[in-house]
Amino acid sequence: MSKEFTVLKRELVYTGRVFRVERDEVRHRTGYRSVRECVVHDGGAVVCPVFSNGDVLLIRQYRYPVDRHILEFPAGKLQPGEPPEDCALRELEEETGYRATSLIGLGSMYTTPGYSSEILYLFAARDLEPGVQNLESGEESITAVRVSFPEAEEMVKDGRIMDGKTIAALYRAKFLTEIAGEKQ
Image (tube, rainbow, N blue to C red):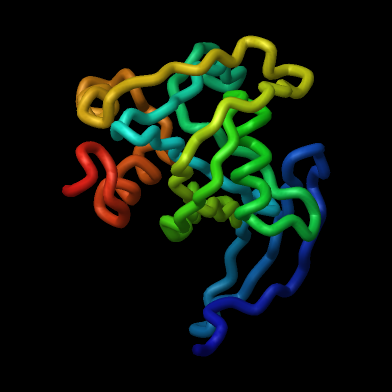
């Protein structure tokens, strides 16, 4: 596969705790010149916790950029060198207090490929056991919300769940695993 663009100049605009922003001057293979601004992110993991009866476990969490509490699945940023599976299990226990003895890969997704390199690895967690919730600083508002799988689908339909990674993981779990009544 040939490269579409050649980077002529790269400028680091911002480096933060979660991502960095780069501004590239580029030339398309046809000769067209342009500027591309990219959010560079190390990626993360999202986990759809599924109880033996098919219920799923969401978290309600305040999200500053949208200034509201939203419903979503536990998720977090990959630490340097951390396998996505380990991140998923770590975030599950930190945010919900549950551990899983079974983790099913549901593939991956780009969050916003128009301006970000972030990739999320999606998982379904089975065989849940109570553990110890260990919220990080800034996550004190997180509460766990257990709902049936059909109710979670209804929450997507009526807009109570608007988080893209949660919607993707929910439907990947529905189509790629046996949940919610053990057969789809």
